[in-house]
Length: 280
Ligand code: AMP
Ligand code: ZN
Ligand code: FE
Ligand code: FE
Image: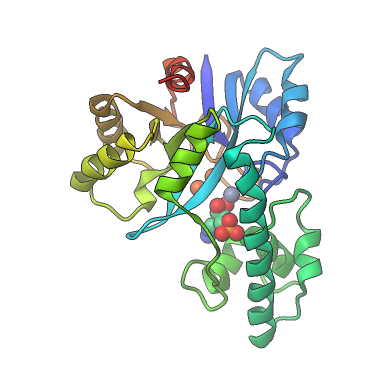
């Protein structure tokens, strides 16, 4: 059994459709996946339909960016069904915030001399969750850069010349909205939150008291030592050590579903533990 609980499709900034992602995962022998597009559940119905005839289980999910003082905190939310609900209803507000920010970024780019429009950026997206990766793709299409990552490096990365903030939920609010929606919130790729190894435990204990259900320990960018450190913290806190590749198709080169950069192993007991966390 192979598990991958962090995947993106064209519903946000991945480069493959939800059905393509599901079929690729199944072809690679993966038996449980979660689709976690940024701020949207728009890909879930297609992914579920594609998974139905295959020997693969699909967990519906999303990935949110939440406010956090020391770094970039992303929250994966699992078992979030594409129906009305407290968190689901806030996703539209988050996407509106994205749209306002996208317009501001494009304005800034125009001021910097780049000939690019909001329409061109939106045309790069096939789903409702449009963001910096699509603006980067528009700049690539216009010939300014060879790859999405180069546009990030020169302009769009946090703090870059064309970087603009967008609205986010607080970590506390996102966690409680997720629980109120019957879903399980998990801290994504903790290496980005700006804490040292010794600081994770206290931060995650606090968030666990608010309803956090897991920590994404098994992640391509985490060293083996960090993976086991985070897994042992999850153990101590009585929450789940999860994992996934953060596959984005060609949008994030070098990653494969199920195996990441070749050394990713997400234990399959994670899936039952995560499912049980819905009811704790
Ligand atoms: P946004 O959601 O619009 O703020 O864009 C953030 C997303 O852009 C991340 O979740 C990644 O998928 C992608 N991203 C961030 N940094 C880079 C980079 N250096 N190269 C390519 N994609 C990136
Ligand atoms: Zn992404
Ligand atoms: Fe993320
Ligand atoms: Fe992600």
